[in-house]
Length: 189
Image (cartoon, rainbow, N blue to C red; front, side, top):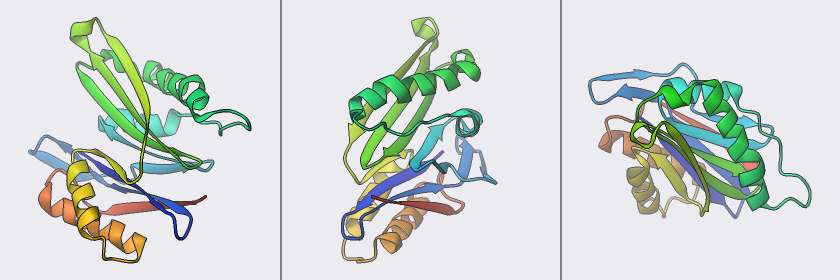
């Protein structure tokens, strides 16, 4: 399982994304990934949760052009990001997975976009891709509620990076399906 956290530091004009390295199969099998779950492709931060096979392939196959001058974030989400994700889902035969879930966070310029991809076999193998804007801080994955609560509880910690790392570590204590190290990316804005 996963916890991915995105935070905007208005003082230092940075956006951070943190992600754990744990993959699990329920509570019976857990191991550390050799590679991060969060990425920076051309100044776009993103991290994924859900099937580890799909998430790994997603990171390798996803092509993300930058937001064009004059293009609204809504045009980008529905005209660029959603089709790019659909292309990867089709390439990985995501429609063959039964009742699958895949979630991701993207930071495009200063915008935080959440993506949810579902495949409901009962709905005749329909792959639904939902995109939406969210506010910082925000998290996805099984540890999302725990990390946001820990981040809020650590509000007296003045250094944002330290606060993020402490919140992630606290999540690993509460949620046994998350952990095994934290990766942290930053982006100037």
